[in-house]
Length: 246
Image (cartoon, rainbow, N blue to C red; front, side, top):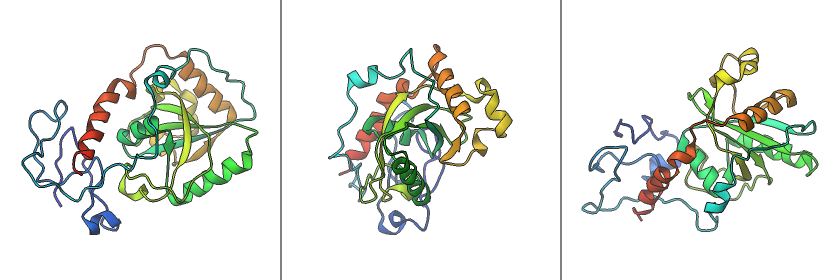
């Protein structure tokens, strides 16, 4: 299959071994090549009104209430308690920023089957006695894009069709986002002491409490920043475009 290679699309293919490849069901941000763009990729929606709708599955969000405008305004608090010696901290890797948008919007996250099992064990082991903080990084971005707290065990029977195809049927767990800011690795020298760079950190890797608190402090201190929130309406637009295929 041929996929458009421009700013609107990720230059990737749906894996041949995924059920979506064989069923003809595609997931965002992947669209069949015959869907034509009308105008610049980063400013306009795709126009499909004159074409037959494809068997594209939309995001299964009917039972998940999206974040409210008031809750969005409460993100990025200026004061946050960092003396969290009983906390645990993990680095979570995302395939693309679209997935982070869905996580912020619907308060959920998922990973591979192995990592979901790992995080489920971590949550049940904590038993509500210690917070579990997740730092998110998009692969090859060289930065963290935010921090959320894990607030539920993994629901392995739940499905959310908005993720990258490999993860659509692996369940998800609840998260409460605290910071949505771009924090570049140059601000975290200790990361470079422990790892070569962000890209070398495995998904769902646990880091020390000392390092976790340092990162939280950096998020709190960061007053001038770029953020996914700056492009939130753009990713909402992409999501609506997917829903329009039904």
